[in-house]
Structures are given as C-alpha cells and as structure tokens.
Length: 410
Image (cartoon, rainbow, N blue to C red; front, top):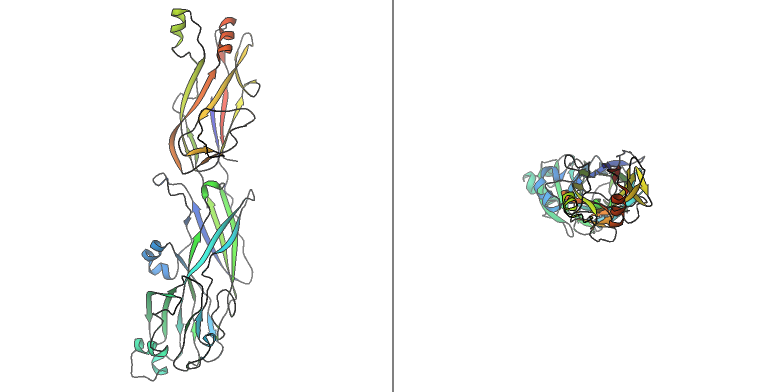
C-alpha cells in the first residue's frame, strides 16, 4: 500500500491601481499545532502610525494602523468661530464595515473580506507657531488648547473617542482619535488661522477575514478603494484639501494548508489474516469468515480534501488481490475512519467509509478545526465468500498494490 498526499501550490500575483496611494494589506493562515483552535488569519501588514506607538492597545482591540504620505494643505484661512464645520478642522471617515471580494489566483474561488476604519489621526502644522497666533504669553500646550476653544486635539469631539495620544511643539500637534461610528468629528477654531497643513494621514483599521479552513491553499487578492477629499470617504472638509484623492488597499490573503499523513514503519505492507490468526484454522479445520487488517495512520489537516483509490488489480469499483500462478483474483474492500474534527460534506463523522475507485462518497472531507497528528484507521477486508474461493483454489498467496490517495485539490 502506498500513501500519497497532494498540496496546492501557492501563486503570487501583484496588482496596482494607477493615480492612487496604494497600500498592501496582507494576512496569512498557517496552522499552528500549539493552537489548533485558532483557525484565523494573522495580519502581516507592516504596522505604521498609531499602533506602532501603542502595540499593546491595538493588540487588545484587534486593530492595526497605517500611516500614508498624504499631505493636506489649507486652500484659504480658517476663520475664527466659523459657522460651518466644513470650514474648519473636520474628519469624517468610513467607520462602518465595507465588503471586498478576494479571488484565488489559481482556481478563481471567491471570498469576502470586511474592513472598517477604526481611527484617524495626523500631525497638524501651523506656520509661525501657535503661541504667536493666540497672542503669546502662554506655553505651547496652553496655546493649542486656546486655539480650539479651550480643548486641544488631545480631546476628541463626538462621535470620535480620545486615545490619549498627543505630542506637540509650538509648530505642530500630533493626535489620534478612535472612530467607533461614522459621523463628523470637528473642531472649531477660536482664532483666525491664516494657513495650516496635515503632514500625513494616519488611520487604524479592523479586518474581518473568511474561514480559512473552507478555503483552498494559495493566494486570494482583491482591493478596496476609498476617495479622499470633500464629500468623499475620507472627508476632511472644504478647507483642507489632500494632495492625493484615492487610497487603494490591495488585499492579499495567503492560505498555507497542512495535509500530512504518516504511516508507521512497515505500515505500507498490509497482511490480511483471519480474526484469530491462521493457526486456529489449521488446528480446527474451520474456515475463517473473513481476512482483514486495520492499519493505523496519523493525519494532520487544516484543509478540505478528498480520498480515492488506485489499484494494481481491479474488481469492479474496488481493488483486488490476485494469485500469481492462476490469475484468480478476489476483491478487497477498503474503508477509512477519520479522527474527531474531520467530517464529511454534511458534517457527519467518518466511520468505516468505503473507498471506491470512482471516489463516490469520499469527495469531500473537511476539518472543523486544525487536526494535528490525530489517529485514523484504514480497514482492509476480504469477505467470507471470497475467502472460501481462495481456500478452495489451493493457492498459496494473493498479492496486489492498493494506493490510498489523500488529495487537497478539491
């Protein structure tokens, strides 16, 4: 008996969108034997911005962040006590979940990834400094608060929420706000600001990925595009205009499944014997009712797979063993029992499931969790009627090769 395992080949495909700030968002699923219940993708996107400064907070809240070199400059002065939020410092970002389709580069299978913007921040800069702008006589910290009606950008306007991130100088102020819901988060200036700029765009995001156990090995790619500017997804008001108007997130999900079958040493040579061994027949003369052998194996699987047979000698839809001298052959029934955690397409346990040459009945087995080196069993049996034929023929030995295939190309 030979055992074969087939694993998909991972392909890499890169895509880009012209006239946009493009950012790869990558995630990978690679099963971890030490954490078999954690069947989720791991975000591998390089972290920049807020989460680079506060990794523990982001890990706890399952956030990641990206800082992009998008600079926004004021196209006119911000008036003191302006009446419209759109004439001052405002941020309205896509905080609700958005869906993007990702496609397997080889098979064309599709899955859905969800993304939401969970935070926004930047570093504003005021030429000449904020101290002189508010009249001098105070330090930079107090001046930044006075500029915005007594509440600096450390304190987020509703519906945004503060993060406690703030650093400042006379010229600049770094901040970051959480965005639990969509809505305009605006600050009103108490003083005339002749000009101002945002030196970058910093955002946090949450990522919802599909169930990798139901996906094929390989690379899934897709994209999500956001507009930046007045009335767009990232809306910074009518005064602060960005130098780029589109952000494209290139989504790349890599699936690296495990499908490994281990047979004990010598397990590829299967000897079929009676229930009580040949000696009982020789001593009593009572013909054995069947010949069989249960062969253990260990399986590690995180992917869907199917099973099948290849035969040296064929008997209908199954394999056979044959006597070399006469050519007389009898069928061998082959079945499989899989460990807990692996089920068929309908979610039922797999217990002595027949393996047939046409693959019927074993077209799909799937893990409910990562199965790491669990015990399964192959069952080989020659039925009673065939045993009687073998004994009556006077033949000494019947042999044949049976190849059991575990195939992840489902």
